View 1: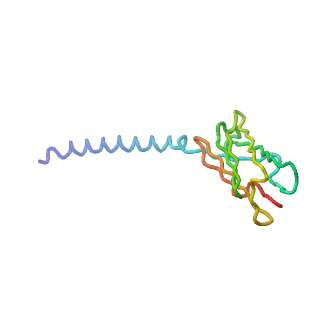
View 2: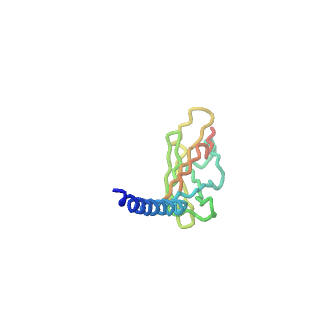
View 3: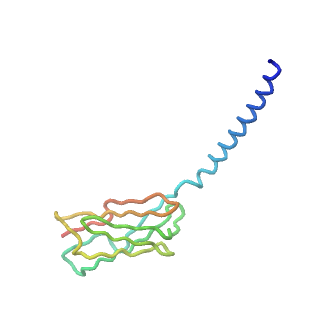
Length: 136
């Protein structure tokens, strides 16, 4: 009985070392698998005044990788709130234009805000609940 004990210990030690090596390999490669941060910029202002013309609102949005400043391609960009919504996809330069009509906005008080949500494959979701201010 005592003769089999050292062989079992050697086998278990080898199996444990292989398992440890596999875990360390996964941990070292996990940084590449983590979603990258991104952010979005609304170009041309983030204030909508309902009493002014024109009735069609066009908001250009640029989506950027926060780590290296490159453009995020094929990101889904949505601006919503006050019973209105505009959704579009970014182009090869990370740009898109969100369009909606002022008549779609239901402003119950003197001011309100539109929520901007951006999603892209390989990136963390970006959200800004106060992206655009709407005033009467």
